[in-house]
Length: 290
Image 1 (cartoon, helix red, strand yellow):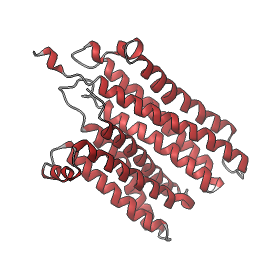
Image 2 (cartoon, rainbow, N blue to C red; image 1 turned 135 degrees about the vertical axis):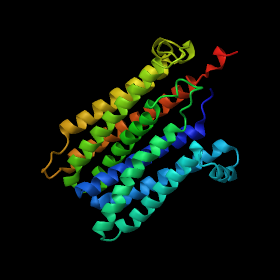
Image 3 (tube, helix red, strand yellow; image 1 turned 90 degrees about the vertical axis):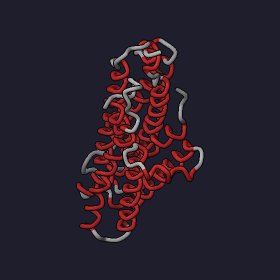
């Protein structure tokens, strides 16, 4: 199957924005990141809007996006409502973040966290179909969620390092490390699902990824840039960055931004490449019938 770039861009931007929403929720539960919560909310809103706009180009005409509202059983309909819910929650949270309403902000933050988890799972689940064995696995929506958490958490940590309180930097880094771990684990799980998908065929085999036509994309794009590089960089940021309770020297924060920034680039590249592989292995079972 050809890569559906509007949907791929949609899923990456959606995932990153969803990760930011979960980060916002964690911050509200921990009473942290108050200085940057408005910036985080606005960034998440922009990513969700940009992703939503990108997805409409898959339909050929933007006005066709309204036609799917008549079929609530459609995965696209569920995606649209999930995006709308996340967008409304994020917008209200951004407005409240400019004021001092701690109770309301916490409630909206928790709703943002829930939306940030549900949205990528909904988007990933819309691809699951028995006719395409490499897609018909629960690891696909989990990969959408995990890569989104990785990108969103690391992006949020960059914002905290640049604009937030230095005291929040260690917590932001710990959350970023968790996000990178989630991304790596769910990416590996989806690759395993491809390998063990039913109705085995060379077009969607592990051999095609490890030493076949998709080997370069897999080893360089997914494994090296999407897994190894981000893991190494966040480990360096943790080793050389400010510790909890420390004043957080500017030089250490600046260095940490560099590590996290390049880790984010690696995560984005890995997420994009794995999704191109997802389309490449999306052969159907039609060949077994005809």
